[in-house]
Image (tube, rainbow, N blue to C red; front, side, top):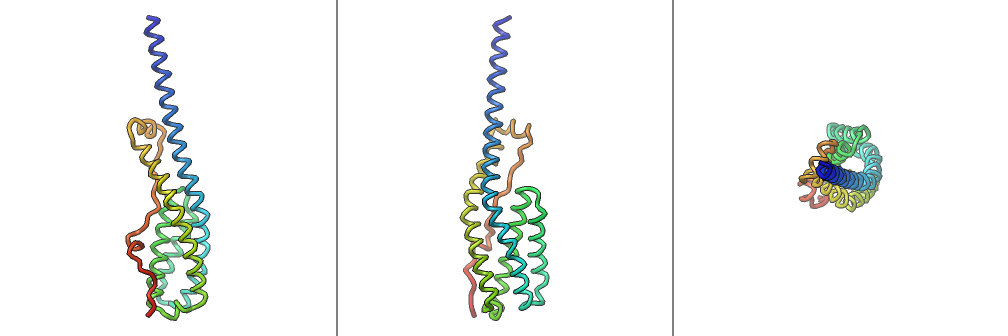
Length: 185
């Protein structure tokens, strides 16, 4: 009877230790995602801060494109209202789409493209986009590792018990992959 009790205690200790190990690994992978996003968040804020300048310059040249500017402004507000990484990533993806639309429209307005203010803003936005692209890979790798960790068995048991939720990737839309740059007429 005492041997059975000792075996059960040893098994309980092993199972508890195993659970703690999995939990700690999940926390580590989640913290890596948070760290990678914190590095991107600073740059995303720079991009968000550039949007009012872009809107002001572009509105002067394209008064009839108000809907596009409203969607860009809404995306900016959604970024500021975001409470967690998934909401910020969604807002960032929304901004990507709106910014691409403005650039595409700018192609149809040569006087807008030739404006010095817009050129400066485009250069600044391009620099920010390059920084985001450089860090996007690390964030997406960390996020994929985390999402994989919470889905793999038996780790998924601990992940579900402690309510670990999947995180969203920073996506590169298909339109961006096809983008061939601004074409001057």
